[in-house]
Length: 315
Image 1 (cartoon, helix red, strand yellow):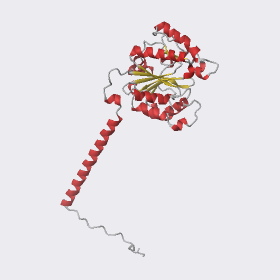
Image 2 (tube, one colour; image 1 turned 180 degrees about the horizontal axis):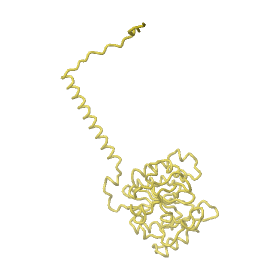
Image 3 (cartoon, rainbow, N blue to C red; image 1 turned 90 degrees about the vertical axis):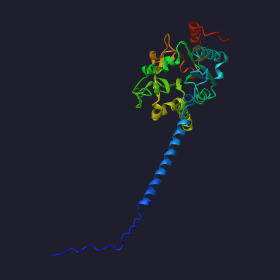
Image 4 (cartoon, rainbow, N blue to C red; image 1 turned 45 degrees about the horizontal axis):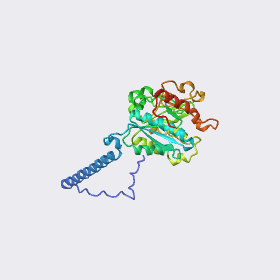
């Protein structure tokens, strides 16, 4: 019969554990030190938290707006090549609308890109709530409509929002949110058959809007040579940055961006202006050498003058 030998001891035994020196007095001291350290960490964390809250709270939310602060600021980029007469008509149209609703108007030369102009407006009017970016080739046709009541009031906005819709038509896999509430929206614009329409949109004042404009103006996108410059950059960031998509609402085109002519590729009759619509825009006129924006917009300017008498007509 065979009996197995007991295992041999290792030639490298583990080191002996140090003798415990625990006693009640030392244990109490350790507990006191841990409690003290915990209180210090908690106090420092609380201080940092309140510091962050204070520095990230928008100025308009943390302080009362001064008397006379406009709720809405209209931003339009102007190009001197348009001609003085046309520029004065556009300014007249904007000023008349702003006067009716106690809004304000900011205009910038086209040598400024749209995004820095808006960023500048947010800084210039820190207590204003909404910023309407409007193409120079657009006329406010119905000045009786306030931007707040017509678009931005939360319940009204929720009734207008195009939910679960491809962000970039016709078949983008990225869709607008279906559960977004009106009071959570900071960026409102339209789309047509060719993409998002950044020529007319509304931005709400706040830290998110500043973040959004900084992302949109990122040097990476500006150097990427998108075919439609900031237009394609906008479509990119909206589709691939959920933080931005989560604050965006698409609304029907005629709400703030009705076209003066019916164009099949741009939405056809659904996007073409009708009586009572808010804004008329000559889409694409500045990119077609066979078209002249001043001539196309003049009848609409005259109709606005006839219907609403927009004060003294510029010479």
